[in-house]
Amino acid sequence: MKTILVTGGTGYIGSHTVVSLLENNYKVVILDNLCNSKISTLARIEKISSKTPDFYQGDIRDATLLASIFKNHPISGVIHFAGLKAVGESQKEPLKYYENNVTGSITLLNEMFKANVKTFVFSSSATVYGEPGSTQYEEGMSTIPINVYGRTKFMIEEVLRDCAQANPDFSVACLRYFNPVGAHQSGLIGENPVGTPNNLMPYVGQIAMGKLPMLKVFGNDYPTPDGTGLRDYIHVDDLAKGHVLALSYLEKNSGALTVNLGTGKPYSVLEMIAAFEKVSGKNIPYEFVDRRSGDLAEYYANPSLAKKLLYWQAEHGIERMCEDTWRFYQQVELSHS
Image 1: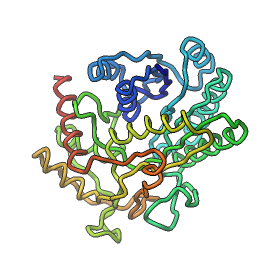
Image 2: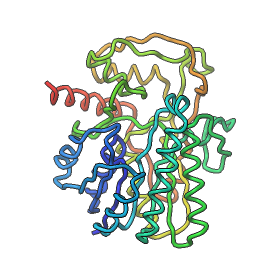
Image 3: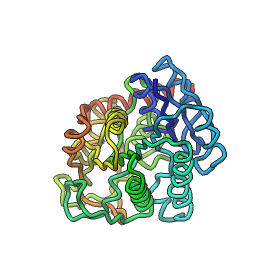
């Protein structure tokens, strides 16, 4: 049974990937500093999978801790989620993002190479594309990120590609994903950020629970059917499966792989609100405000390369995304009452 180190494994996408790994008979070691997740997620992972991952609370910049993890466990691969991810904050505090995301990843790679671990799946982002001049994003497009968060992801991708070039037995997959939403069908794990949510669906979920008063919709004058931005929303369970399939691919192939993980079908903000209202039976009040700088009218994935190489494709649609999100928010509320 292979052992995988998952950094950021109690976070939103990390926790779902841990569940998927456990279901596929991997052993899992989690490293997370809990800056945007909760320790209670571990018990929820155990309840879903009936398996207990090993857990270390700590930071990917802590080389001593990383060395001890690699020494104490027969790690065969790393899936790397740990990093800061708020675009707005990255613009205000660039050094914090370069230090956490880029320097942290380099520290992790250094300790990984010392331990002779040569398989690495990286949680990248569609933000690396910037504004490529087309609405459908393909892996061969130019990458000119337009915000600090996207630049940190792109820099890490470049580091990984250089490492693969210099080390022929190093296998790396950079998974560029679009807008993760949804939650595990059990309702036990989902996106429950510390503080006010930055993303659409947790914000909508908190409005439905009466925690927040109203949604601000940034821009209603885009050249789209209803004037609001179109995005490629992908169910987090589909995303988790993509990471496990990427790991499986790397076990048989060396070099650097870059693939999009998305549905290839964009939905508008108003379509997402309407779908959530339908499944929850709750009214989601919203108001239109000015566009945010750097936001695009529309973008979505061309996911055909992931289908061809990883035999992966998204299975869950918009209704399932909203159903699972709503179930999770109701469960969270029950567990706090």
